[in-house]
Amino acid sequence: GGGGGGGGGGGGGGEGGLGIALAEDEREEKQEEEPENLEEGEEEESPAAEEDQGEKETKKEEYKLEDKFKVVSLVVQNEPAVEGLPSVESMVSGFQAKKAKLADKKILKEDIDKIMQTGLFENVNVRVIPVGPNEARVTYELQERQLSPVYSVTVAGTTILPDDIVENINKKFREVPALTPALLGWARNSIDGWYRERGLAFGCVSHFEGVESGAVTVQCFEGVIDQVKVMYETRSGKVLQKGHYPEKWIWNSLPFKRGHHYNLEDGKRALRNVYATDLYENVQVIPRLRPPEEDPTQRQVVVEVRVMEKPIKTTDLQLEWGLAPGESGRPTIGSIVPAGEIFVEHKNIDGEGASASGSLTSSDLLVPTNDIGFKVEYKKPYIFGVNDENKASLVASAFNTRKQSVVFSPGAGDDEVPVVWITRTGARIGLHETYSRNSKGNYGFVLQQVQSHDESGALCTVGSRKLPNGTFANDGPPTTLSGTGSDTLHET
Image (cartoon, rainbow, N blue to C red):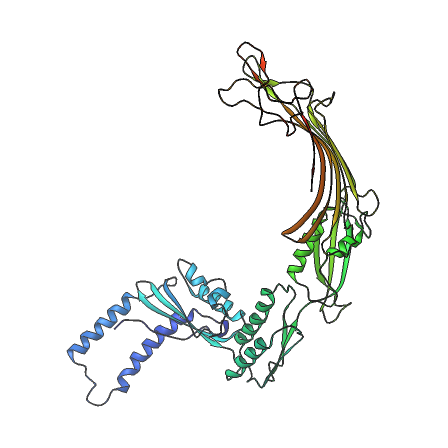
């Protein structure tokens, strides 16, 4: 037999550590009372019994606990058997008796206080049983709070909660002899979880009514949109009521409707749609409840859409300098005259969101001659009106580009091939439609002239190669489809 003893203690957040002392006192009292309970003829113990008793006393002395002792195992008994309810240990973020290297009465009391603070239990009994030299097994025995029996269950404040959720809660409440806080927690988690799975950010159980009487009402809150506001922010943080771009484009991008439940997916869709206009560099969707003085029911949601506009006029200059190996092997600037690009854009030239932009590129910005490239573009959104589901926009552009041909270039070990430049000059007009986030369509017509030139700028009809004697042989393939060095093409 082992010298362990059980005992009660520490209920209701009291001195849980008294369990050790109580266990030892009870053993001594039982040993003192034992002879009184013996029948006649059993007053004297046999030698074997005396030997066994001596062994027990030795083990009892061997397993005596000090003020601080090691907890080798901790068991929780009578946890609430409620589906989805976390363990008591998780609720209190772990037991100190487990975390500490050595436990004492103070640590056990801290654990009991935390358990009682959950509000789920009427009492907590602690049993500390020595199982080795200054080692003990600790048991927390829980006594769950019992409320009144349930006579009726009503779920109020909801318009979208399905009947099966309500029926399941009603069934669970009626299956138990008395309602418990743990069961109320399960009901709250079931309903709140259903709202979260569907992105209903404000959907939840606000409170329970009639718990003491048994006529229980589960009061829900769902968050219904009452108002949508569009607000404009400046870089300095100032809030304006009006912006430069047509506000109707923002309203056309918002999926929110008065009287509908606020949904997180609608918030994400609003962000994507407003950003897609390419007119705003920052967009925020901020839902909030009306204050109690405006809405005592605390059910109405106000959605604020805050935007920060991109600059209407933009000018951008990019300069490039090429590096080449110098005489000493160190990189040096090939030319102090930079290559680069000049870009100019106006995002609202007609007050209705039409934009125009132009860019100029050259390898020599100071003297942009033959290699000059340009692009001018005009874009008119919502060409068929803001109610067009496909959000059709008209895009027209004129362009001129000059690039070195990758076809007429030497391979490894081949003869030297003179550079051929391809120049494209033309115009493009098209209609762009957006059907969904990942589905778009383009209809267009392109008219362009394609010409090939040599280094001097003259038309180049065929490719050439350098011969060993230093002359060039014009015996390559034609540089354009027509063989004249200049083609006019149209595409649809």
